[in-house]
Length: 242
Image (cartoon, rainbow, N blue to C red; front, side):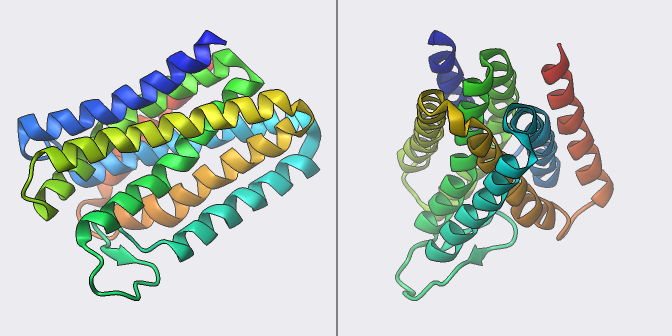
């Protein structure tokens, strides 16, 4: 039981560390595309090895596939309902009011990423604490550059330095809370665990394919992006097999 709290703390620390590094460096030490594609590699492998495959093993193809469809639908609906801002692509969603500040659009974009990541760690922990811990370590590692990039974007959008830092920490708290929500929900209702694993996997695939990959390949060096993806892919694969 204590492992899930350790995993949720890791997620919080990863994002918070990235936010603090933004203040120290004042710029991204490596390519934005490299960092984002690294995160995409981690998320894509985790969605299969930590969520979808365990879901099929636990409850079969039908229940897991239903969960995947639900995960896609849920994140798609959230994206449609809440306008948000990407680091590279810019604003997305039905922005009806021009008074919405860039700051809040970026925060919404971060939250949309963090919800499936935290939920995925929680549900995979309900399946196996060992699997959940490995997933949490990988997600926390990729949260560091992700938190760094987002906090720098927030620093550009807001003059007060504490606002981006606090926002970065709060985004980590959101991720941790959804980790706990995913764990306790499907640890309690274990008959629906395969459904939960499918939801987590589907949501993470949606974010990776719909958000991360189009963003990193929209500009810059495709070779750098591909190498970043490969590094994240191999890291998650390694953590999931040790």
